[in-house]
Image 1 (cartoon, rainbow, N blue to C red):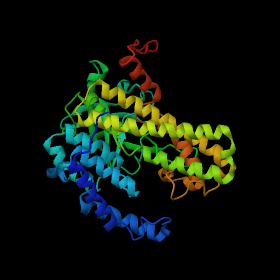
Image 2: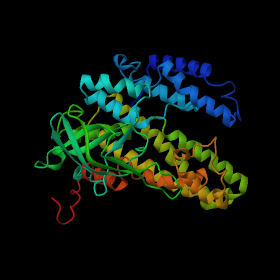
Image 3: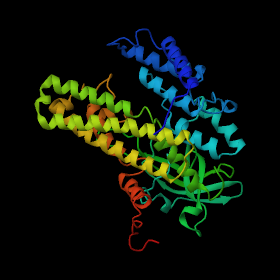
Image 4: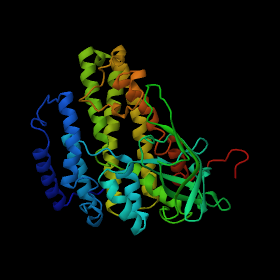
Length: 414
């Protein structure tokens, strides 16, 4: 790790801090600051508008496509200062973080001009159509097909665990466009409109009553022939670019939500006496140590990025980082429930002011109300799956670092 923030990045930090202090509500930085439900609603409605006017949405994009053209280090500083102030960025993960950068890297000029402005202004919502019932970790075995019919692709198949599909205008879909070549070589990356005959979205209700995950069925659904990103049968490479954006986001800020959780755990353990339990103390210190490792690993990832090292070492680092933080958080949420005990079931456990990711709630929560903390406990299980399961991350490390033989295929699979 050999990382120094250049002077221009630190100057930019001053600019961001000044903008945040000017535009956040009065009292935001005061200890104990809270907003009423009405104030929160008004803030959420106005904040995205302020972000857009300030140019902070997708600010690392080139100016010609609506961004500020920020350098990598400026983008890092932007994320750090928003995290420091606990100021929300626009939460359009699939558009801003995944498909937008993918189109920038691999799309045609026509695709950039058509899709990027709508991602930028929030008028086009997205979902991700990768996983299938039998093709999650082994994504290259996907069975959804796309067949050319004149100037359109005709798509048939099923996707699963498709987050926010019920609200999306478009889905970036991996489909098999050539069944006669090696499985990774016959996949294309398509941009498919969701509001059309032939697409059915079915919610998958989770134990906490939410239904943000969905099954999506394609029955002769269509998209224009020009909606292929990166070229026909090049979807495997493009998909790996997308997954790289997913796994590499927030390199120097991701650890902060865990640090906030740790602070709340210690505070509660001191309040209810759980801190006197030596096992609780040991687990708390293990969590603290792992948070520091996350912070250092984030700096290592950033060092690799700014030095231009897009090699296997970066791939392995991304795999180990993702595996490490997701498994750490899974154990941490078990620790949180042990500290809170029966209180974890109260509706107020883990409410506003904490970093428990219970804002993932969607339709249906009222039918199975749980506390934000229990909702976060459930969600932490999924963190070891999305973005690449821990088992697959171990395979990458085993094969690429340790030189172990490739994972054997089940009987009957090539």
